Image (cartoon, rainbow, N blue to C red; front, side, top):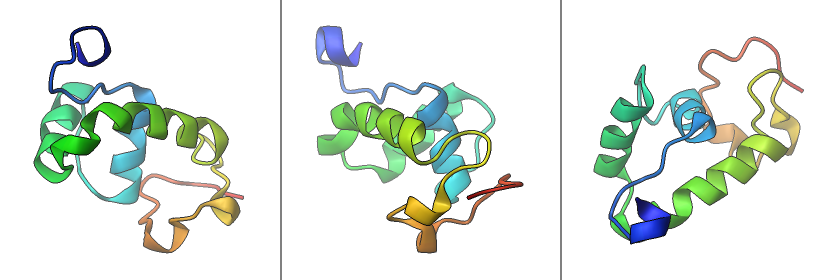
Length: 87
């Protein structure tokens, strides 16, 4: 909806769901809940770019298992929710 039709939504995939919860920005169980909660805290001007940024960040640094916290630019602000092991 966002990319094809330029609708004002936040595309939420696994990275966009996991990372904001890990950071402690939100506390949601489903991607649908995540989209609703992110829309409340992220300014509209960033909605379209949010997905691309968080997908790349999730692939490069904030992996699901053993994230590379030592390379993370926001590590000192991260609550590391549900992180059992990190590098």
